[in-house]
Image (tube, rainbow, N blue to C red; front, side, top):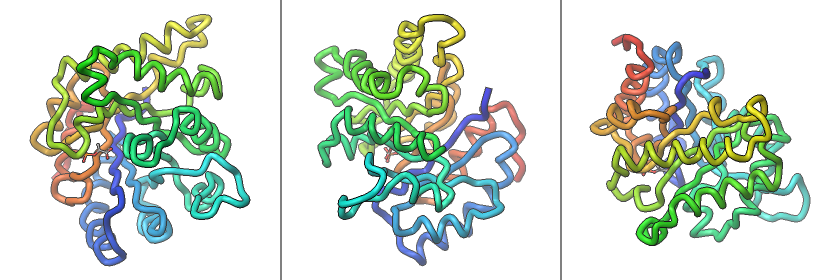
Length: 264
Ligand code: PEP
């Protein structure tokens, strides 16, 4: 089993100076935890070079927040997977709800991005999750299964052998509202069950090895409880990843959950 994974999604925040200050506080502390957990940060695209440079030789990893589904050409404003890979991105978020909802990315476009990321030898972090209305209508499972099915349609079930899934209830992102323990466990379990039900044989079932992380208003005060839930393999952290103290505490919680003593 791989190590638990923590990803910080900086969204459209930061500048050269703030990034530098944040990284200089994070790096020495987070490096001490790497024996127990994997940690990545996803800065805005213009800062990939700065963060790539700062993380060099630290073992901490770089991620990108989105990617084009196209390889090259007349796509003004877009960034291709091969460009991200040149900056040593290890992970790329695909299908974040802010992109699905605000930028109308369809599940088919998300699936094409997923494939583009894998084709450039990086790992897609597929974000899935339901809106409040969908949950209220009892459609949570259906919506998430549709989001997963789009990936299977694009790359086959084997695509989940080299991927991360992030369960992020849309109503919990940036709202301060966290999903209940039973809701998180049940969705993580249903993601594995759905993938498993699509596997033609046990050998071709990626569901048990697939890391599924939770995202949605995780902070230092609730991280330990969330990371201890069954089937939760880490976290995708938005707002709290911009505050050094918070992100360090969250990382320590995950490292402790991984059954380790955290060094001071
Ligand atoms: C996110 O952006 O993926 C996220 C989970 O944000 P927040 O932690 O702020 O809810």
